Image (cartoon, rainbow, N blue to C red; front, side):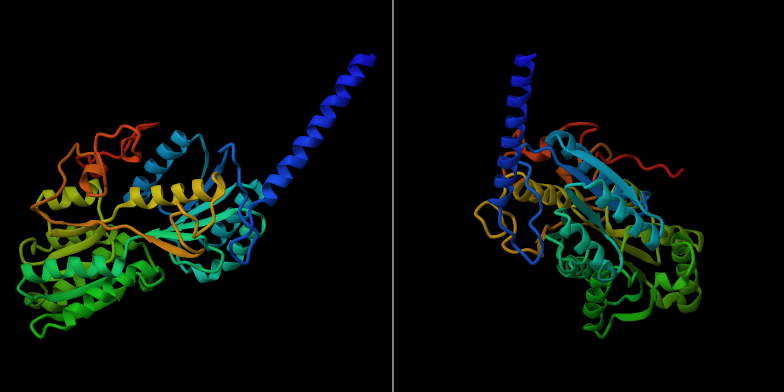
Length: 376
């Protein structure tokens, strides 16, 4: 009995020492913005909450596939959250905070300004908050996206040259998400610089007030009827809108007369381009690189204990955006079925055969591969 009590005493003392050491270790990491510093887990045992809507978006499917792959590779736990509306989103955020996840990662949320209080609540709980393809508000540690205006300009110049700057254009965007109008506003501005190019119409799809796929189809039909031969191209802010527009143009019998462009990429959009539908142009967005950069930063800040601005940290200050570039896809360079997504982009930056490089990780279901899209 005495031996048992002595052992219990030693165990309790050891637990207390470990607790003190843990607190002392945490105190070594100073805050880097106006919020408590996100917790550091040097053992790498992190839990990541990922928040998005519309799981039918191929860009989200690509993000999720890379996210699952990398969390498996890194030994991290992943909690996937899909929300249905704004109130549901707030409830889901609060649930993640109550679960005490280590970091929250978002993808393409609307109206981030209205969510700043949620960001603050998470950060005050010691949870890191990171965005992908989204607006930065106070408390968000970083955003990972592409320079959407530059991408839009590159796409617009490619299409403008093909049409000798003599197109009549309609524009479909979504004004509740910054990256959408960041793309289309730049394209519209460039088009307006050419006296032989006319912007005939513009529509915010959110104003339609009903299913976006049906709305995109309806707007295309209306524009074909309203503008006739004047309409030669429809610019959209995402392939999610471009695909139903391509269907509408095909049904209207103007497959060769009117083209449509989009952003994002993936098997569906590339199948439309490959099969010579009116969807003729798309800017391929490097979604996999977006999420990889965020996870690398989480590792740097919440496992390695780096601060923004430290050597080896991807960002120099809290709230910085990490930019990644994609490529313009058309009928000449559309990725073939069976292509590994990492081969589509030119961001290898080193040896493509390096087995340790992130683009060669093959955990879980492996990397996204271009498929022969078949509509269900």
